[in-house]
Image (tube, rainbow, N blue to C red; front, side, top):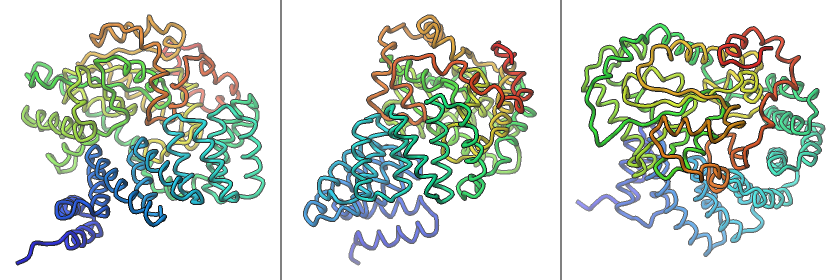
Length: 514
């Protein structure tokens, strides 16, 4: 019987994708690559499947290989359509350097292709190449001047580059012409941000409230389960006690695989600044907003598949079960970042791992936690103003009251659980880091057992040269500034409806009262 061909493996892979069996699809596409490594379709489909399974490092390598093969084809026939599809896939999986390389080649081959310049503008902006992003966006608009979402993107890039008056005029013109709901939602969010920069504070919240009303009609937000996060927080508060958290504190774990350090807090609280400061140190590797704890969570529910909370399931595990969860965490991390898991200090920065700090303490009692806090009013203001990827957490921040409620629920959980944690943790305030940078971060370095490195003061230079998976990427690519401290005072009247919700945390974290 003849050996199966690349085409037959591809067909089986397509069928598995249709059946939503991604593991089977990945196996088929891997066989297709083995049968014909020069087939860009096999490389691309294998890359997408591996990324979907969490093997991002390996998956993006295959996507890049598909891009290289399609680049040669595009140079021969001048058609960049497939090349741009790979560029978009690389962006989806946060490989913006790879997307940038392909995008630059695509617009060289076809200088009249709108999508090429659109994708190039996005790649450049994500890598803090502001002037290049603006140049690509201008060319895209020359090719498609009536493309409304491109106009909104252009305004966002202008604002990032400090061209706020230009951004304001562009967005107001777009709104005056009439937009589809999704276009208007984004335009109003961007205009609110621009008006804040221009100190037109009395106009900001009208656009934020309008964007909240529009969000209700957008399927990507309507599809989110708004009960999930509050339900998890209630279950965690009821289920995690000091006995469970400390159950494996004295257990022996493999010395060759020390526990990670976790950097947590709340959205827009200063965790991105902290990761960039720590990331300058040569002994530190930062895993930025990765899903390692989520993978461990999923493994736990597969190990104990019946109904029950995370805490209840952890109570039923023995020490081998805990070790299996640790192995799951490191396997996922290695799939994502490769040999970087072996760095002396592995820093897992996923801001909202605050919700799962009980799971973290139970599985990694030998870990350390760095918790960053910021004035609750500045946090909520920044969250409400920011355009975020739709998730069961961020969907709450589409409205002003929802933002305050989510913040209060998460911080109430933190204040409850921090009294019961058995692992070591340190808290510090973002405002202290701004006012007293070295003394504040020296305490963090001491806590983590790191020698102080004066080069960390140049964190912004390092941040400006890479992709950061946070809306704060443009801020941390600048020298430290204090204009974001007490920013809420420009909007004091807006805080009247949410003051009672935030007051306990303003007082607990020792900020100036309302």
